[in-house]
Length: 171
Image 1: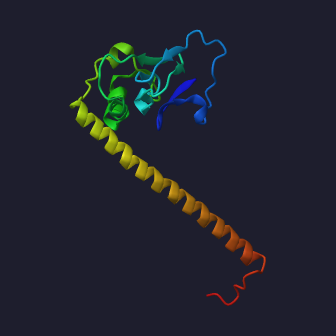
Image 2: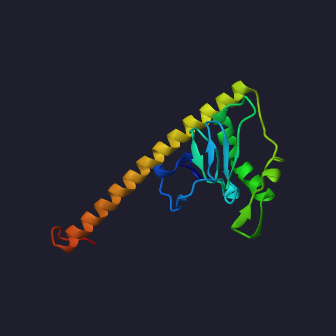
Image 3: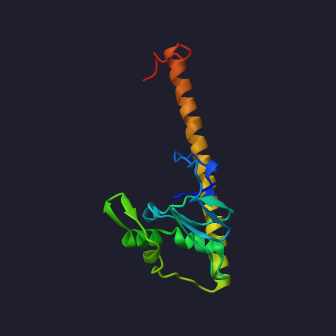
């Protein structure tokens, strides 16, 4: 089972917290292969789009396109998940109210695809991967430091209220 996540693209469904239930009857589920464009039609405007790196099945309510090109999958994954494209999905989606907008296959096909030469695509994708990995590492380290600071804060409070630290003379 695969799923499309706004922050991750196409991933194995069980690799992330997911409140959506898999239907018992999977007759309408679709088989996708690596390189396929997979879109959650109800959440494209939020960025739930990606090029699948995996072979698996997805909800029959997703839009799936098999590639008919020789472009770089990593580049296209970054491109189709970019803020500009997410905005574009929102512009061509239709719905009865905000938060309930759906993109149609026919409308989806009108989006232009910006495709530089293949070597440049690869350089762009590699650069984005390198830079976002650095950022993700910094975020993880920061989260670890925040957790350590919370633990230190709790220990300090516990020590002060249990009398392990004399705070009577502290101004």
